[in-house]
Every structure is written in structure tokens, then in C-alpha cells.
Length: 256
Image (cartoon, rainbow, N blue to C red; front, side, top):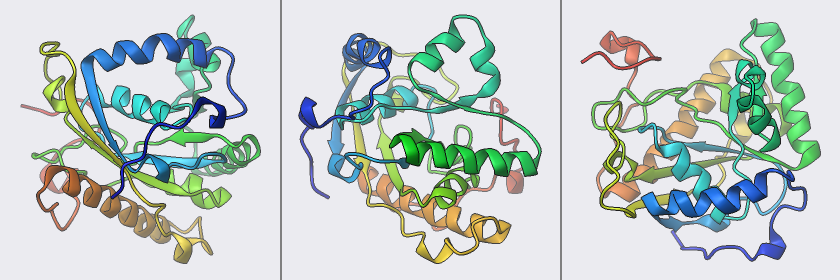
């Protein structure tokens, strides 16, 4: 996997939220005090147009890692966020101003309609969005990716948008899963790798079929696990961890 240098400013996104870039200019150096990123494959992130970025998720701090890596690769890091958060005073203003994407929790029919509308909007605006396919911090004991949810591939297949797998490793040294923040020493190394777009061509014909969505999600999760295996230097488990098989809830803190 090759290493790509940071993009020149002139080739960054043409359509920039006016509020996002001033915020990023202040926040990115602060985040860099915590993490010293080593990025591979930044050239795999599309330089323009829509995409869905699918990273692994094992620390409450890793959204900062993902956001900084995407920013360094020349794109605006936009995450999906619960629609209710956009109605919170101040927070909602910040989320809207930085171009975050609201997602409603609703019935399956309206959810499917919203996915299609959001996908069309991403294509029309040429924007990318970051979606954690696991939905929450992994329950896998050794922090490997667990079973994914279908939201990322739903969004991608609805609009013919590429899914870019991403893996990172090292954020657990700063903030262990459900642990306490460790600020010292500063600039701990965190490795990041972007992968090639996931080949979902064989699933494009029936993007609303549940079995197809699950199978496509499994392909995405396998690619993420493979990238993480590269970073960690050890083979990933052959199958993804399924919380329900181990009596675990898929959301909320893990029981000790």
C-alpha cells in the first residue's frame, strides 16, 4: 500500500461550508497534539464527488482520528448524526454549519425513502459522508471489527456511490474503549490506512433486498478487517464478532 502526501489546497473540495473550514483550521492543530497520524493510501479517497467512508470503531476518540485523516486527505469530514441532535441549541447550529448529515430513526419505509433522498443529495452536491458500519464501538474482545449494519451499503447502492474502507489503530492508547483519557505523552502515533473502493457491483441490481444488503455489508467489513490486519501485523479473525451470539447488547456500554 502506497503512502500519499497531503493534497495541495487548490485541489480541495470546491464547495466548502463557510463555517467548517475556519473551525477546522483551529481544531485540526489541537487534535494533532493528541495524535501523530501516519497515513497510507490517502490517494484512495476520491478527490471530488460523493463517497461513503467506512472506518472501524473501537474508541470514543477515534472520530477525531478519522476526521483529521480525512481533512489531511483534502476532504471535509462529514459524519452522519442523529436528527434530534440538530434540534439542540448551539450544537445543532454547529452541526449544520459544519455540514454534518442528519439521520432520522423512523419506519423502514420512510427510512428507505430518506436513504434514497440523502444519496441523491450527496451525488448532486459531490459530498462525502463518514458512516460507521458497526453502529457502535466494537464488542470484539481484541478490538477487531464486529458484524456491520447495512446503513453504509444502503446509502452507497442507492446512489451508485463508492464505499471506501478505512482502518486505523492506536487511538486506544489515548482513550481505551469505555476507559479514561490519557493525555500524556502527547502526539502518540496512530496509523491510518484508506483502502480501494469495495467492489459491490454484484449487489447493485437488488439494493433493497435484505439478504443482499447483509452480504454486501459483510464484504465491506471483511475489507476493513483486512486493512486493520495490515496495520496490526496480525491476521484478523476469519468471521466477524456477533454480539447477540455472546449475550451482548449492540449499543450502550459493555457490561464489566
